[in-house]
Structure formats: structure tokens, C-alpha cells
Length: 191
Image 1 (tube, rainbow, N blue to C red):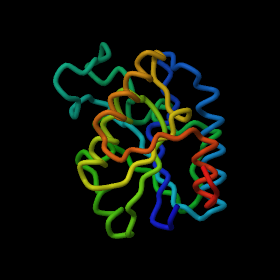
Image 2 (cartoon, helix red, strand yellow; image 1 turned 30 degrees about the vertical axis):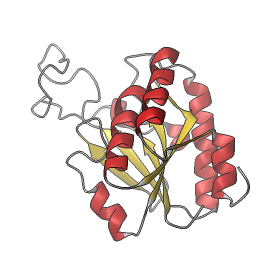
Image 3 (cartoon, helix red, strand yellow; image 1 turned 90 degrees about the horizontal axis):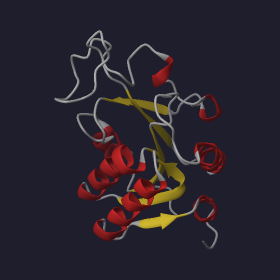
């Protein structure tokens, strides 16, 4: 692994309106990735899905609460906060986004390119939505992607595995690693 890497943690937030498979394991694996990235001085970027409280930025068909605002990821609520065990440290960037992909209408691509980053180590939720969208956009923008399979999850194992298969099939040169393999790679060891 080179020094042009970044650990991109997708939407590991307090949202609790749906059950995620193996979430405790995913949090533990993400925590160990964070520890390794910090020790190796690999930059860390968090994304948060945040919808305007009044619902003015919701896409057509997005579920709404009775007051017309978003039914999930509502700005100003604990739902949008990063899970406490994975809390960002000083100097780590938290990127708020309004859509699934971390690249959609954000300055992520420009900031990565300005920093000389060419490889994204991606983990987070939901495997079949925000992770999938971010991986496809990263690939389209020319980044090398390392996806950490056991540091991602979604609402069903079938959805998780289906998304992994879709990405493996269509994102050429995608590396799908376990958290153990990824940690060894970040440390420059055989993986």
C-alpha cells in the first residue's frame, strides 16, 4: 500500500430506524481499521447522510415523516451523528452528503485529487446503497478501490452479498478484502 490512500467510512451513523445485519461486528472491524489507519498516518474521511430537517432537499419519492420532513437522517437529530465508538478525531474530515454517493454534489473528488490520493479504502453502510453508489462513482472517477467486506453491512445478508457480487462483477480492479487483510495491507505486510 502506498501513502496515497485514504480510509473512507460511509455513513456509520446513529440512525436506528432499521436493523442492520452484524452491525456490532462491522463496528468492531471498522474500529480496528481506524486504529491501523491512524497508526499508519493514512487520512480518514467520514461521510454522513444528512437530510434538511424541512425535507426541502429530498429526492422525489423519499419517505417523509408526518410533518413533511425526512423520515430518516434528519439534520439536527442524533440520527446523523457518527457512532460513538468510531468518533472522528481532530483533523479527520466529516463530509455531509444529501444523496447516496459520497461524490454526488460534494467536493470529495476535488479534495482527494488535490491531496494526491489515488486509492480509497471503503467501508460502511449500507452496502447495497451508499457504499455501492460511492464505489461506482470512485471507479468512474479513476480511483483504485479497496472494499472491506466485513466492515460493511445492510439490512439483509442477501442484500450485502448481492451488492458485493455486483461490485466485484462491474468495478474492474476492485479489491475486496477482509478487515484483517486490509489491516495487513495498510501496514505494508502480505495480505
